Image (cartoon, rainbow, N blue to C red; front, side, top):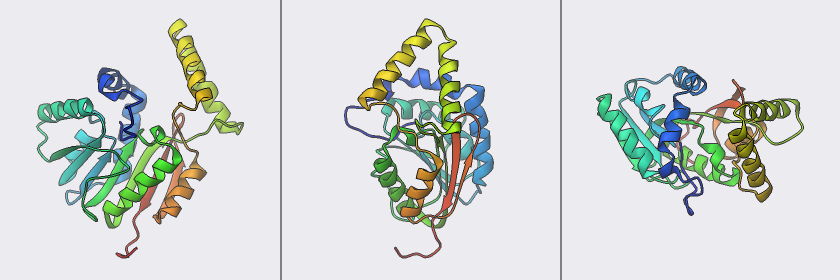
Length: 237
């Protein structure tokens, strides 16, 4: 589920389609899928936007609930697999767009519902804000936004410590391969090349600065959190 940044594709998404499919099939991610679909309250009148759609974990079931769904991803290979899944599921109201979330190639006020699952932690906070500014631009007044993402930080706060310990313990249980992954991730953290999850207060600050309304942040399973917001009803600004 990717949407930027583009420079050099540091996450190499085109070569990670199969790995992502395995992740998306896990009970944890299926549970998040169900939770998000419950939250969005999609209607047949909605034109929906899936930000960082990947291979379609949200896109495919969302398509059956809305008039049209636009799937944005930076990886051509991910979108090719999404088109394959759409064909297999006989989804015909889907538009796939290869793009960076920070520069959405969509018309102003053309989307009624925007969703995303586990994409924004690949963006630095400043890029999260650019992407959310774009989301606000393309949402109609009153349009809804629901984002599920990692919501924690590398801090000594009790929840952050618990999340980090749980993640490290789970990886370590995989044996040598897990230990190697921990070492690699530690190196990435030191080099400033690790993922960029943001805690709930940062999400609230960014959404507020981008002039969203009805902002709600809820912590859910594991390290995940849900952010819900709307574009205000006024049409100017």
